[in-house]
Image 1 (cartoon, helix red, strand yellow):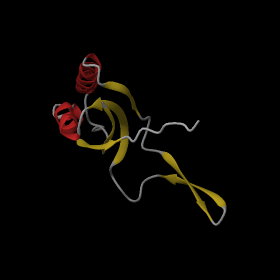
Image 2: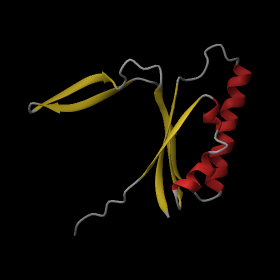
Image 3: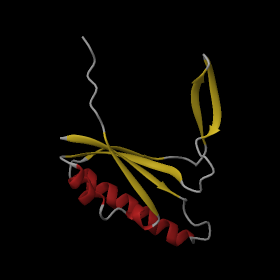
Length: 118
C-alpha cells in the first residue's frame, strides 16, 4: 500500500464564525479523520498552529533563515495527513467528503519510501 502526504491549504477560518459554528466545523474534521483512521488508512495527521513559519536555505555557504514561507499569498498550509491508499484514484475517493474542501484545497503527493543503507 502506498503512502500519500495530503497538504491542507486555505485561508483559515472566518473570524466572524460563531463559537457554535466553530465547534461544528471541528467536529466535522474530527469525524472525517476518525473515519479514515477506522478504515486503517490514517498513518498520521496534525493541524499546524498558525500561518507563521520559517524558511531555511543555504546561500553561498551561509544558512539563511527568513520568516515565511509565504510569498504574498492569502493561502497557507494549515495541516497535513499521511494516508495509506493503493492509488491516487483511491486517495480522491478518500478525500471526496473531507470538510476541508468547503473552504480550501488538498494537495496530494505520493511518498517515496526511503530505505536505509546497510
